[in-house]
Structures are given as structure tokens and as C-alpha cells.
Image 1 (cartoon, one colour):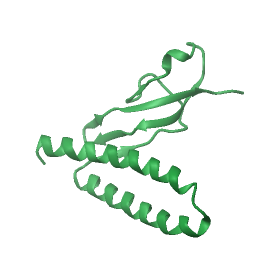
Image 2: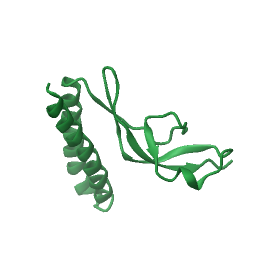
Image 3: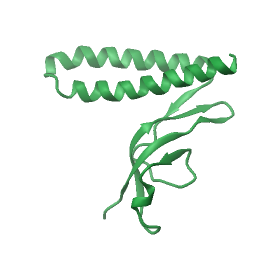
Image 4: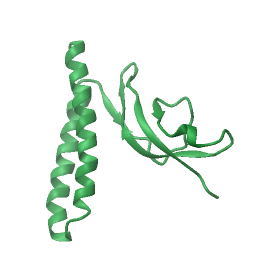
Length: 117
């Protein structure tokens, strides 16, 4: 695949991932009878997206609820809100990480939250 083609596929994957998040929030407002049909369609679409990315040697990585480490392949847009001794987790992925066979293709964007014990 050419570099412009790969870049376009990565952009499409990120936009699709964002759209799926919006779609999930919308589905949460539906009654149970309607949710099933839309859930099946979304799962089918995400499966096809994953297959297309896999064919190009790419994959989406979601690190929500995982411990935050400054070395992860994502930019934390609210990192300045926390102290150096705070234990943090990824609360929400705004953009997923895209990985290829040789490592990170595109870094993600995350929101963090402090772990309370």
C-alpha cells in the first residue's frame, strides 16, 4: 500500500472509531427493542473495519482503564491537572492508537483520571 493510501486508511479508521463512540452513546438512549438491531450493525461494521485494517497490517489499540505511563503512545490532554505522585488511569480515549507491524503508526489522545483508593 502506498504511504498516502495508508495514511488515508488510518484517518478513516480513526474517524470510524470516533463515530462508533457517538453511535454507542446514541444507542444508550434507545429502548431495548431497538438496541439489538443497531448493536448488531455496529459490531458488523467494527468487525469489517478490523478486517480491513488487518489486511493492511494495522490495528486499533484502545487503552481505556489501563494505568497511565508517560511513555505510552498517546498524548494526555489533561496531564497538567495532576501531580507527579498521582496514580493515573486512562479514563477516555479521544483518538485510538494505531499500530502497524513496525510499531506505532499514529499516537492516540486520552483523558486521564486520578485513581482514588
